[in-house]
Every structure is written in C-alpha cells, then in structure tokens.
Image 1 (tube, one colour):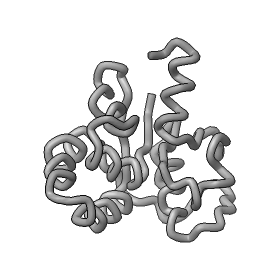
Image 2: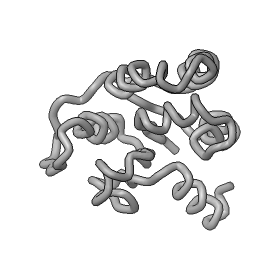
Image 3: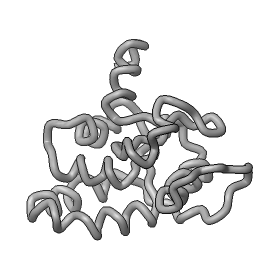
Image 4: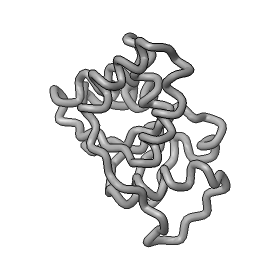
Length: 140
C-alpha cells in the first residue's frame, strides 16, 4: 500500500508520539506500507517545524525523514484537475504522479471537499479515518 503524507501529517508525526500520524510512520514496515511525500511537502514541513520546538525537529530528523521516500514535485497533471486551493495543488498533483493509493492529510480546511472521497482513484483521508477503515476491514 502506497501512502502519500501531506506536510500536516509529517508535522503531526514529528510533534506527537501518540497520534495516528506517528503510528503510521512507526508501523509502516510491519504493515508493508510505503510512505511517500514530495519536495514541496518537505519544504513546507521544514519551514513549520521550528514552531513546534526542538523535540519535533529532532523527531523529524531521527524518525520521519528516514522513513519517507521523497519524490519530486509534479507540476502539471496528466488528467484534468479542478482543485481550488493553489497552495495544496502541488500535493494532489505529486500524489497522483507517485501513483499512491491514499493521500493522507490533516488539513481539513483546504481538503474539505475531498476528504473521504477519491481523485482519480486516490483516496483522500485523515490518518485517523484511514486507520479506522483499515481496522474495520481487518487490515490492522
């Protein structure tokens, strides 16, 4: 299963040891999940990490950064994409280009109309919602 992690998920995993975002990263290998993110998300994460404190920065360097496959940013879609939030458009484009199964985000405001839905076969979920779905299906 290929999971694309938005910067909000990367930040959450760095800041909190108990959330769904950290669980995904710490257990990815056990469940054979491939964790993928983009250069755009990396830059956004690194810009915001200092706001979360030294421990979050340390956790990112120690845990998160090493567990994620970093892909280049996709700048144009292969398919027509109508997505109103210009700042998160690169996230959706990169997830589509990486051919992931799920795009995970905690950005409920910008992804409001897409959460719980799919874009060209890519499910868009929060980490918690996705883990609950996996549990209900017996995956975890």
